[in-house]
Image (cartoon, rainbow, N blue to C red; front, side, top):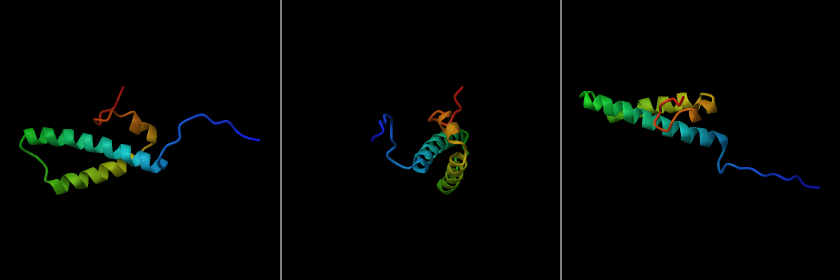
Length: 79
């Protein structure tokens, strides 16, 4: 008695995968925003950037996972 299975199996937990994706999306989004602020002479201090990044990761990781993959890796929503 056996079951045939053909598919992909993640190398980590679902939570780890979602967290890594949230970190990537948040990092790129904040980099893009901070670059614009830097050009305008309003660059944020590193500790404030880290605080915002941490909050954004938590926010993104709390969303439905589908929404993380509907966002390009630069933080912009895909159409």
